[in-house]
Image (cartoon, rainbow, N blue to C red; front, side):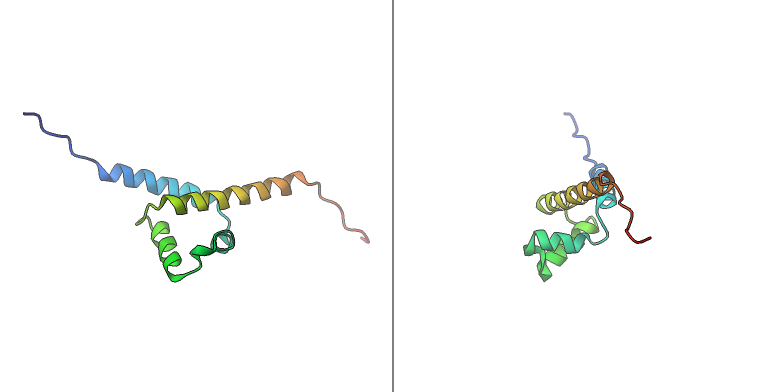
Length: 93
């Protein structure tokens, strides 16, 4: 009789935490405000708890992950637009 190999929960948890670090590096400092503006359903106590649990790595909410990915993508596109716009000198100097 063959024995089943033990599942490694730590590998999945470590991969998830690494992905979270990469995601939060892409987000602006006011990501909570932007998230609530775009998705008002997170503007509640339950939404705050979901966000806190997600941030701490307790929850793996895929819907919240997609929402944060969209906020990060919007922020990154704003940064790209700012880089592409030529700086105009202020008049009167």
